[in-house]
Image (tube, rainbow, N blue to C red):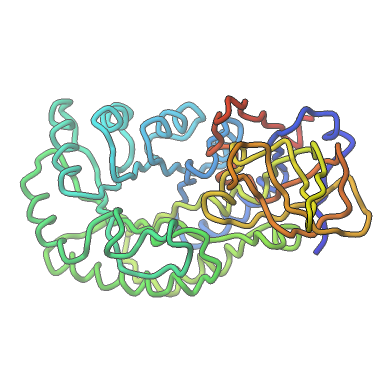
Length: 385
């Protein structure tokens, strides 16, 4: 596998750790997504939780995307970055009154609602403002995404959404809520799904549910399929852009949309992950009894996925072309879980070498913390260094 191409002469003088974003790759990715969604009349809402860096958001908003938000502050961030309220959807199992009021004040397009109590609260708060809140019901289709248990979200026993067996009760309740307008149904079966055929059973379930609602006299103008398309963490250089062509084509072929009905998507990781890297330097190379440790100045505070999900990120010593050796690649945090990889092959490594942790554009910067009183790393952009 080849290394990524980094402007090392420009990067080596920057204080590490920092996040580096390839803006040309981001724009190429956005262009392909726009082309494929336009082909079928689909609408894409960028999942803000993947990366809420202000400049990243502004670029995506400029390309005409909507925003998928899961907190009131994400709604605020999307609005500040230029996303129109008419393209903002708001999901989440635990929306507070404060967050709901923020979204109502902005007149967002839709709340993706996940429980009966939430429906009642949105109705109550909308009534106080004299507003009609548009909602889509998030339904668990009981489709197995075949991904990590922490990022599987579409099974019937997940905390997210409505169980299909409860829909008659939900529909009955909505009929009594005067400040709620049901405009669609919403799904999200999981994240980092690499086999696009996994989404075929979701389409089949959506087709069944369309008939379910129509039999009860309900016409749904919008179907929201969520996101979940994965990326290649193993070889990001060879596969920098996910297979959006196959992804959207599958939904086009398998979804039985009605005349005038619109399909919405909420992709995040596959839009921003590959354009980002966490750049860090080797502080020490420590000789153990049976192994070597490459101790970096970046840690789990800067990229938590390996510690949280046992996730893999490709690691490259971009300062060295020497023969590879095996290292445990670790950070400085006072936790044993602060390990990026064990027995990992890197070009021979020494103190001061610049290391790239690839595919960190999603769930890197946005999940950073200040544990151990560490500073949040700065972000730098390929077109502005």
